[in-house]
Image (cartoon, rainbow, N blue to C red):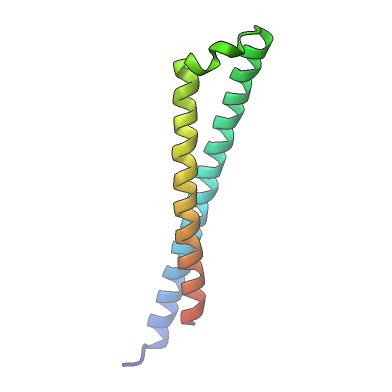
Length: 94
């Protein structure tokens, strides 16, 4: 069954919007990751200034921040995988 031109246009617009939202999510997640790395850098810098690098791994805020960074990286990889699959799939259908 062939699609009508209006349905093709509608489906194309939906695919485009979906791909765009996926890329916006990816950019937002990368921005959050960047912010977390900046915070981590500032905290490490404080430990260096105080000459207390030995206690760095015992600081719960550092451990929590590293865990959050790891979670962000996992989400970014998932979004990149979805984006490459969805974005390449939508262009192949046309």
